[in-house]
Length: 161
Image 1 (tube, one colour):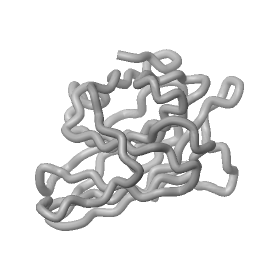
Image 2 (cartoon, one colour):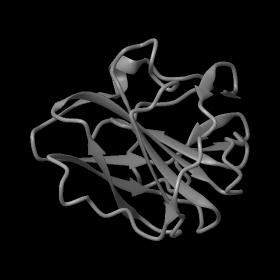
Image 3 (cartoon, one colour):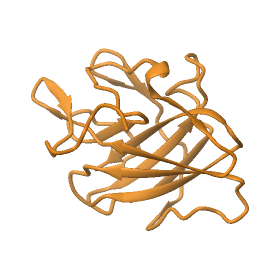
């Protein structure tokens, strides 16, 4: 586990294949298309993780992980979900590509883009319902700036979709 500030825990990644693109698999009945906004640069990797809505599992045991090389610009990633249901998504810009979250260097964001402090947001603020086909959502990346956390581009919304 990796701790962000005073309580944000994110799992260290198991081995994940890194590709240049994250297309949707043709055989997946439920795809979650994550539009990632506000990437600081093209360093390292970008990973999106799908979590169940249970508080005890959130940010600890992911259901699915997709990882690509960081393109340095807004990008869409596809996470094949197990089926329709309620989920949460965490996106991490691992700028050093070392598989660990460096809170002072890496970016991170959550589904529904809750306002962030130095702790993990409540799972109820980041869950969403995926349908039986394609579900689209936007995640704005946040980076630490001094003593605050937020997007690097001021024109990006950080609350709501």
